[in-house]
Image 1: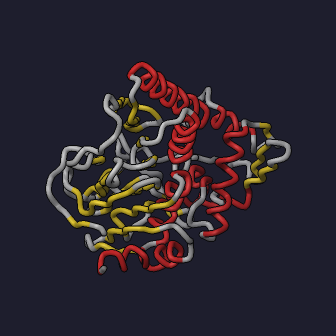
Image 2: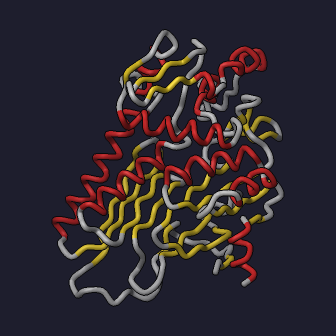
Length: 331
């Protein structure tokens, strides 16, 4: 059952108060760093300290490798090369990018364009640190390049081609989830039975705490350090997209990084969207999708997907649950 709370907490991922009855000598090992433009943390339960630290280092190295590959702002990245060259013809790229783009296009079709990695055609002109948004004429000019149907992907050849020369892509709405999944897979292959990997708003839990699930907090969108919902989770992923992550104020309007592909402007209507799914790549993409769709259409989509749930906070701060979670809160 979900528990509601607005008390200040120190950590997003809270350990249960009672420790599990696991083998003597085992303990939690963890490390935090900055990767993929956000805070990344790895925590695992192990008996061999040296081996556990080695696995954590391997996870962080994998995330860094994917970051170097998929960062559109790094001129030397594979994704930056694609953005430079794919408008002129097919570009053979890495299996990882083919996999991520394949899944991204699936969600573009499923949502009828609410999720669209070509939002970068306009998104590239926003500067959230400097508080700058593109002029109306720039948005009007390049909004036509936001069109997932103009991304021609050939999985067999491992190539990608943009049929609109001005099109650009950004994998920020799905790449962190993919990196989290790859990390969990690495730990599973090594025999780890309990762990959590987080990259910004994307987390995936492997196993549990032995006799009880791990509790994850969904932060209050307007009150730093507070959480609105505490969710006990095991063997699942959760992603949150919020208008508080990267934003600046333009008068009374909050200009944030989640753009509506139909307008090229920041989506209005929700403060945050959290999605639970078996894989972080899916929860990552779906949290962005639902944020763009809004409460009614977003929950309609989530309720149509088996094994997927959502918690939304609308512009007035009201909580909305997907059908299965709503039943659990009333149970």
